Image (cartoon, rainbow, N blue to C red):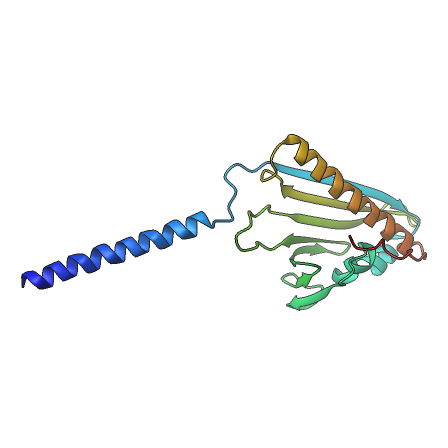
Length: 186
C-alpha cells in the first residue's frame, strides 16, 4: 500500500511539474505585449473621379497588390474574396474584418513567437462632389516593441511614406493612368 501512495505522489509531482513547465513555456512564447503604445497613421488624397468609380478601380480586396506594388501579388488563402472573414496573403495573412459600400478594414494575423502589434488598416473612399472623392487610408498598430521613441518615429515615417505612395498610386489608377514599374526589391 505504501508503494502505491509513493508512486501516486511521484506521478502527481511529475505531472504538475510538466504542466507547470508547459504553462511557463507557453507564457514565455506569448505574443501579447505588456505595455502597448498604439499609434494611428491617417493619410488621404483627393481624386478627380466619383467615389463609385474610384472604389470599382481600387477597392477589391486583392487590388492591394497593384497599388502597393507587391512583387509576390495577392492571393485569397481562406474565405471568399470581398467577404468579411476572407484572408489574403500579401507576404503574410490579412483578415478582412469589416466593410461598407466604399471601405474595408483588415487586420494582420498574429505570428508564432512574434509580439502581436495589432496592425489594422482601413481603406475608404468618400464622395466629395458628384465628380470628386477622397481616398483615406489609416493604419493602426502598436509599436512598443521597438527599442525607443526615435525608432518608433522612424517606423511611423517609413509606413507613412510607403502608404502615401500607395494612395498616390490609387489616385493614378482611379483617374485612368498607369503606374510605372515598381522599384526593384531590396
